[in-house]
Image 1 (cartoon, rainbow, N blue to C red):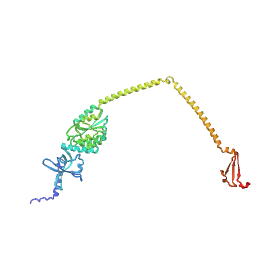
Image 2 (image 1 turned 120 degrees about the vertical axis):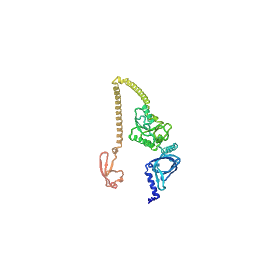
Image 3 (image 1 turned 90 degrees about the vertical axis):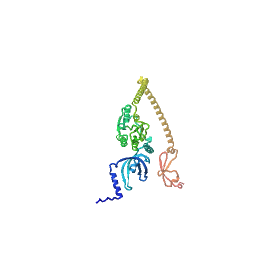
Image 4 (image 1 turned 135 degrees about the vertical axis):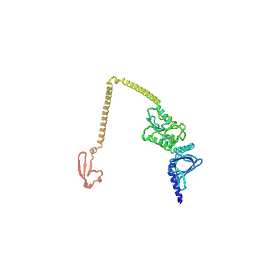
Length: 404
């Protein structure tokens, strides 16, 4: 009897095929290259939908928001790209597709588009503002060099540093400068130098190459790391005509790696000349000061007080006598003036005294301790006190009619 044939629903079939695709070690992490077509940026969810095609084939693809938010460029139809991701099946439509986790442009024209897009974005943010750039120290003690340990650039840098400024300590930070590992290694190297504070200035760069070779230095993450560095950074990527995002983000751009070494250090020959010139200026200045002080000392020795030890004392004694005489005269004059003012004040006070009025025959009548200035203040029978020039008497007010 023939084996009973298995019957599946569409959903079961799609689920089974999906499990087969996702369990494949060959399809779980792959890189697919192709030209973008049917590109759609879903503005509501933030997901990107597209197709990748070559001369004879096409595959649907999707890049979810959590991954495309890391892109440093805007994908466009017709752009050649390399996409890393995994293959799976969208069960609802029964369509297998590539789920993209990372994407980078491939063609030189596409790389230039991505470069200009990122440059415009960061420039608009103000990441390249000159006001943010830190000055390069004039006499660095330690110089960190972030580059490939095997390239020609590192030899150029080391040769220039040893010739121009051998007193500086070179802190080597070996990294790869192209390929998938270059970007994270460059970023980590800048962070490590800052965390350990092991340098006064950083040189980061590599020798020349194609735009693809230099692409690690066009990283948005690297640009932000350089801008956040507390240590000044000199960028030296490629040749004089090569410009990368790293160059714009750095505190100073050098046309070449050897140029970076020159910009980071003073020339020892120029330093020696400077020190010799300063030594000569200091010697001349000391001679001038010595001559001036010698003349001043000679002038002091020529003064009369130096020839006659008592001359200065005699001068001061004479001055003391003069001031003493002035003080005595001033004191006597002041006393005389004060005496005269006292006599005048006493005479004036005496003329205003109530006793002088009483001596002329007047008297003062008081009632209950108050001076009587008006007859209406008294009544018949009131006892009053009458003060004369000498002595006083009590009296009683009598009725005016009783005297008649």
